[in-house]
Image (tube, rainbow, N blue to C red; front, top):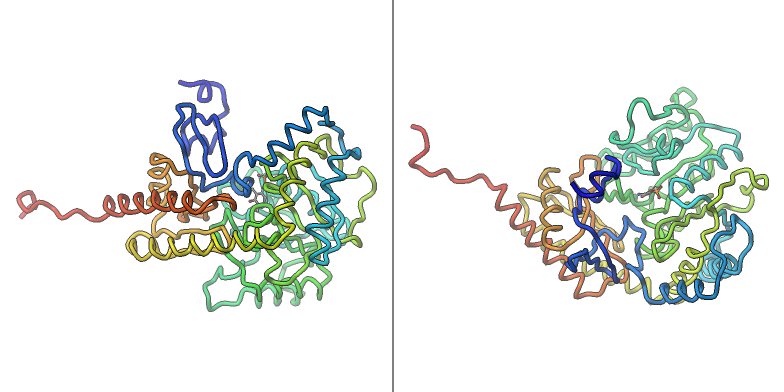
Length: 429
Ligand code: PMP
């Protein structure tokens, strides 16, 4: 039994899917203790959009440490925070004509979601919140209450109060307009759905199976929010920071949510950091009302400021979209070659999901892939979707190499699951 099995809690999860001891990482590759390379199609569940240890971020972090830069400062003003805010304002907000205040929450995604829920409730004076089927927002009590997957909804943990679930776009098939149901539920005083403080959504449900809301649906939800004086909160924790091909995932729909939760790749280098963007009129916090010790990770600010430089010009977004096209070409071929195993794929920008007929086969492919040096995870309520989430900065050769491993694993799994022709001599008569 190794030290991890002996001492680390049973809660361990990813180390079970990827059972080795990692030591080093660079770009889209991880290396284990034995020096074995792995192509990373998981990218820290979206925390490593710019890859592992991007050299410009590492250099900035080393320089900051060597200059005795302040590491811990609660939420005091520091030069590192100032530079981050200035870059965020000039590179992200101003060119998009967005006016948001920035709240530095505690460092995990769930912390940003908690802050958003609390603020929405304070602003509106209402408690109910609408979330969606297959949504994932984190596992602290408030965030867990609006997370749909049963795996996380143990009877004894969940506060079932103050959260109503509505069908996400496409939940009932292509023909059914789930927006009509949401509209009716909000209009009808006998729907049983209390007027909520907020509607919380992911524009692409990443954990939920790479379910992509259409632009028209997103615009419809935004309009409903306006009409009923409900705050729209977009959880851009996994698919923000460029994952869908634009900095914010909702840009494609032309909407501006009331609040936006960002985490994971906002710090660029995978350091813990989360922010909640708030429309100025909703920034009704009293000073220190939602506080915490770790709300100013200066190292994260230093790396984040470097990461934002990618967005100064349009060519980064263009490159991401170009890589997405390449990924889709591969996926189109893989689907055509494996019709008995997979039914199709969904994707936008650099997040894609390969839909399997059976969850067991999906898991098998992910396991085989690890054995061949590719890190890839499953998602979806049944675990029947393989999620492709490579760093946005992955080069074409590495992308192709990863897809080639996937192709081999699909082939082996398809062959193994094909019913065997029985040897005639042993067929009972
Ligand atoms: N929201 C979304 C959309 C996420 O994908 C995640 C993490 N997978 C979270 C919230 C929670 O973030 P964290 O794990 O950092 O609390």
